[in-house]
Length: 322
Image (cartoon, rainbow, N blue to C red):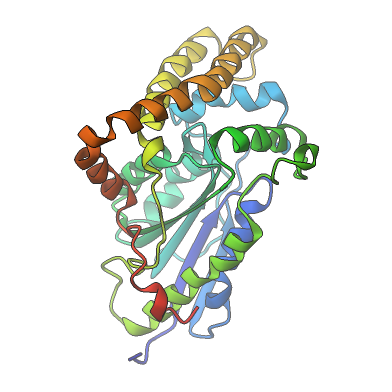
């Protein structure tokens, strides 16, 4: 039963290049915006350097080392006026198995140090399919900020690793989002998945009413299938991230960002990445399947860890009003 509450203040922070993440944010927050007892502040992160979309080839890969090593770019001071919120929703993209540079810039800012402390935070991820390492980095940043990470929601492109590597890369570098050759599916999170994400907003709204004047202290999205870890990608992502660290270190030593001296190494990295996704990832998935009878328990533990704090269960879905 809901209890009478004072007005709740929710801060939503996001950075969207193509507009996809912005649509996801709009879907999740739509039930909250309809509630007169909830004040929503929508704040798009504004880096001092603009990252154009679609990307050019070299600009895209030139951002890779700084993403991996989280070299935070400066951001413009957010306009949000309050210093304390009842809930923060942090929506972000994944760039090179890391949070986007504008997101890193936000988490390293004085604004974040003032606003995130002792505040419950829900992370909202919209990406191709690999997000585990990026979320680990964000969790560490939130811990440093003394924020309380209570939930995580993840929506991905369901096209499959090889197919969406082709379609998403084309989208990023050309801006074209149509069906490639009339056969490959459109890249990105499906319209249906984005629309259905409003259910999370409905649950959040309900929770804000039910807690009254008390702070949110635990997950409110458990049982609503907020996140699902693809077991076969855990090993691939860990392996890929280790190699990203190696390549990132090389590129950072070669020259600073935006230097043409990096170009030959960027081309080499792009070739390596393409071959890794086409050859190494499928092979590693096959090896993991062969070994799965012997690693089943370990994988189950890893899956549970990465799905926390919301978890991948759906036991509350049948009772969800949204």
